[in-house]
Amino acid sequence: QKEVEQDPGPLSVPEGAIVSLNCTYSNSAFQYFMWYRQYSRKGPELLMYTYSSGNKEDGRFTAQVDKSSKYISLFIRDSQPSDSATYLCAIIQGAQKLVFGQGTRLTINP
Amino acid sequence: SAVISQKPSRDICQRGTSLTIQCQVDSQVTMMFWYRQQPGQSLTLIATANQGSEATYESGFVIDKFPISRPNLTFSTLTVSNMSPEDSSIYLCSVTSGVAKNIQYFGAGTRLSVL
Image 1: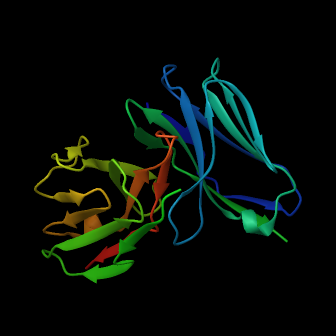
Image 2: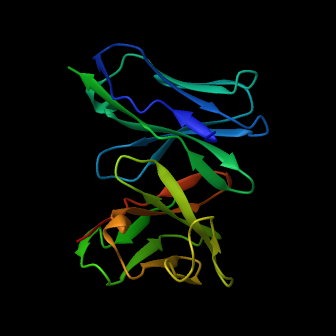
Image 3: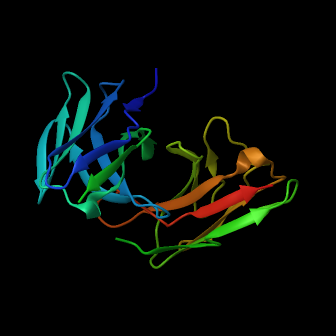
């Protein structure tokens, strides 16, 4: 079983829609959860990170962690064409090793 | 966050040759990381590079194939040796910076194609 599983998509939605991106992870000991955004031909940029359970909101983005079901989510409200990118979830394993999901390619259609 | 520059941004290489990728950071950082992103795949950690010590390699990656240098706190290189078409990937460096030691910031990556 992979440590982090993510539906690769692709996912295509109309502008203004609410987007839900999801990952599952295998080890209940993981504490730090990240979401990175990667535009085409660019390196990943950190969007949000959460520690342990709960929600974290930043503008149109909300990150959610459900440790009981080992499920992490990223919600994008009022999606914009500029949100079109690949979204990668990641967990920190051990000291500082990042383990990434496969990434979901998202397209927001005007 | 740190500003990370990688060189070259892309290259096309012949089978059997080697390529050295440079990663320069605009501030001193303790830990630098090298990742590989194969076509259509996610990022996989190759090794962690600390200044003044040998790099620590992940399972499946060996020093003879991916030698790493870390001569100071702002610079590292990754060499992809004796390349084959299977080495065609994006290679990225990242650093941890600032108070949030768990947060990694990435360079734009080096796109490598091996013919």
